[in-house]
Image 1 (cartoon, rainbow, N blue to C red):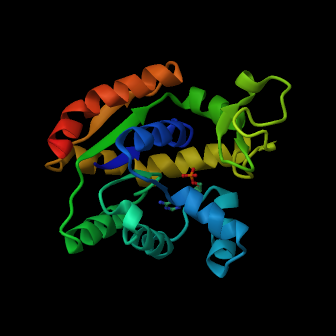
Image 2: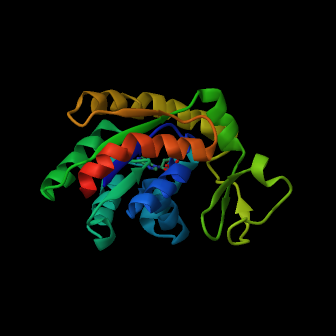
Length: 220
Ligand code: AMP
């Protein structure tokens, strides 16, 4: 199963992407996670990326396409993958298409989560991430807890989840990434829009329902 999960920041791509990846036994390839890893490791690529990320701007396409090329070449991604947060520009979409062509591979589905702006800002500014295992949660769910429900690790706010940066990230999404929805909608594979509001379980069910036919075709 080769999927792209699209949607604005805060739409639930990480949470739902994890669930879909587990369901289809494929890796979730999040360019945001790859950049945060590079940043943590203190690599030159990570340091360069940091200033863009902290400003809510996009990291240059060549950096992103380099990361994606490496990820696609790993054995884990041989049978399938789910992209989360990639592609974000037309250049990245073209780059992905060239990378897949060169591997005689093609996408099975492009799905986007649809969530209104007001809800996105509330979701992201309340988002907390476990510094140890990466589990994503929200202040509404955790109350006064400071530890991760999964592993007990420390819950932290991502440095680019502040309200001002979130608003910039939404503008960048509208300007540079939203046009890709039209691009995929017009492509032979098409675009599937899923309502990204409701409970986490309801959204997972809606995603699995729209992907059921594709999964049958892929797995036979
Ligand atoms: P995310 O975790 O997907 O919300 O990404 C966090 C930040 O990483 C974004 O605001 C960008 O600065 C950067 N980033 C992640 N993926 C991409 C991408 N495909 N293209 C450019 N920048 C990216």
